[in-house]
Image 1 (tube, rainbow, N blue to C red):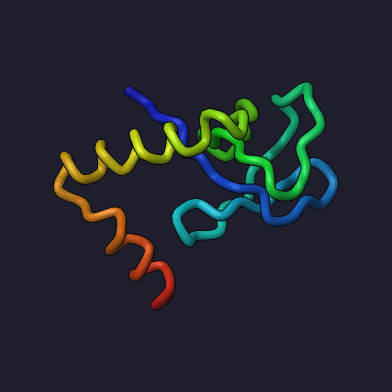
Image 2 (image 1 turned 120 degrees about the horizontal axis):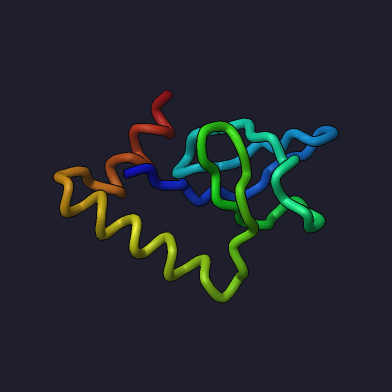
Length: 87
């Protein structure tokens, strides 16, 4: 099973966006999205591509669900944030 990862757009150059994904910077190709993507938007990233925009109404729920998944898998989402700051 493959999961997309939500990330917030922090910059855009051409068709490539840089995302903040739990404190890590990830570059993704925007070609699969047929909508205008702006800085501050959230997108779902999978395999180096932004596959869809996440509406502002769903961002908090989506991030909360991922935190539950990470916690149940034995990862501490807060520790991931702290570790990303140390890098």
